[in-house]
Length: 397
Image 1: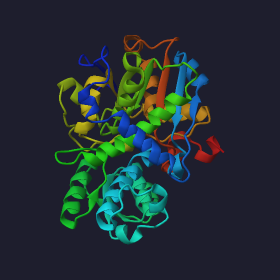
Image 2 (image 1 turned 135 degrees about the vertical axis):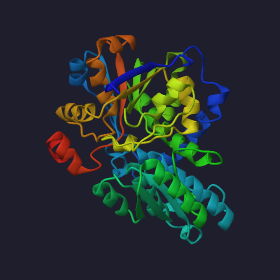
Image 3 (image 1 turned 90 degrees about the vertical axis):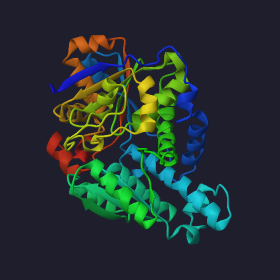
């Protein structure tokens, strides 16, 4: 490892439109359905798209547009758009079977109209923090129970944030992928429903729902761009790949051949997408996945996400953890609070600015307009203070 490695994907299908193979995973109809339901959710409003002019100037770029998810539904993370939507879709099926009501309205479910049908339902997930908190919140709002698994390096602050929404939290030994396997085994034994954004054999419908929810973020961002503007580049972080794949699919559907050059960034200690790109097939990252960018600490790419990224992503980048605190501090100078995983796109731009040959290879320069997703705020304020030197409320009062 060198702290910075870039791989260009020769399989990227730059010259064709979104195809049938991709549409089997994510499609416009699924995104539209997610958008209708999420717009009906109490408290829904689009998160801001920030124009970070000072950062763009420092990085030698024409524009940096930053989709700030730190205020999403009060959960401080983009995950609020995926997991709760998947819980909603699952509970609709339960309500249809038990109460005979098809396509129950969001408002009726939240109001408790079908609580008799959902109160004994248990949803479960493994998490580094953000996804589990979103599952717990979705279960609480919609009227069912949640059991959330965390691994041994998840911070105590993130554990408390999950428990705050009424979930039972179980900490297990090992890394994120170990917690995924334990969660799946316990769910099968107890007839619980796993709510995950990673897919595997026999488990695709719910991760697809999660990703359709994430696509709404991309639609929001596209709608918030200056009139007629299309980003030249999009730099998106990957854990299991669901978020990156959703953004890639939404951009491909919206802009076709004119879509942004799509760059996937990961921490070098959890680089399953990068390794998969190099190998040309899903490939696991070994080891403990111990990265400061905890929300991205996944060792196995989701097969559904890979079905989009294999042809949709132009480049894959892995960087050292050292870039994350620098990105957090740069964003703080612009009054933006970003967590260790949320700043990954900015961390990639800082790394590229220090590797001119790679920056030039990606076509990044004064005429480039780059879209980033700030996927989380300060999900652990104590860690944020340690890394940035300021409290979140001091950065964004």
